[in-house]
Amino acid sequence: MKLYCATTNPGKIREFQASLAGHFDVAVIPGLAGIAPPEETGDTFEANAMVKARYYSRFCNGLLFADDSGLAVDALGGAPGVMSARFAGPNATDEENNRLLLERLQGVRHRKARFVCAIALARGGDPVGTFSAEVEGEITDEPRGQRGFGYDPLFYYEPFECTFGQALLADKKRVSHRARALAQMREWLKQQKVVR
Image 1 (cartoon, rainbow, N blue to C red):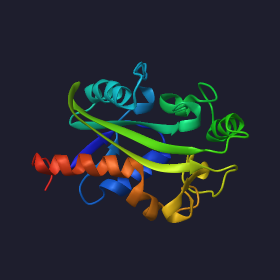
Image 2 (image 1 turned 180 degrees about the vertical axis):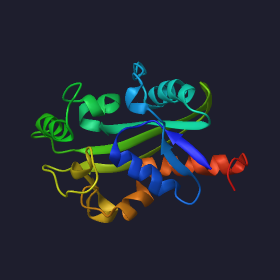
Image 3 (image 1 turned 90 degrees about the vertical axis):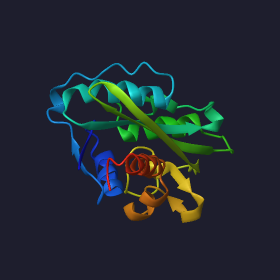
Image 4 (image 1 turned 90 degrees about the horizontal axis):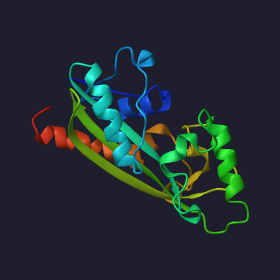
């Protein structure tokens, strides 16, 4: 069964496809690049995910999911939070966001953080459901690893004894916030008899 997603982030698309393989044919909504994005006005990941899911689901024939995810650092009062992708500015690169995060944490000893993911599912502009998950870690003092995307090279996950930027995709998929939220959505859809 085809399930549409609304993202142009190649890292997220890879994770979506890996997590839902064997259950759904995950496809980016046709013509996404030409659709003006909605304004993300929510102050939570869940609210922004639903804004996107309801908006983009009007442009496809079928179920569509959208995610809003990011990093919450305790020492920064939960920042960058919903501003994770735009932490260093509206068109910031991963490197710029990571650099600013390290600058803000300079001299800070307690660097506990969590990745948070909220996924919203919609059809034809109507909400269907929301799913969320977190994974706990700590922020390193410098980037480590070339894998992953976003803040992965700074996110140390103790059970792996490495950052998400050093972890294999298959390993990260088992524990990541996004994989856990996708698993919740997949199981819910199975219970609803949407997928076998």
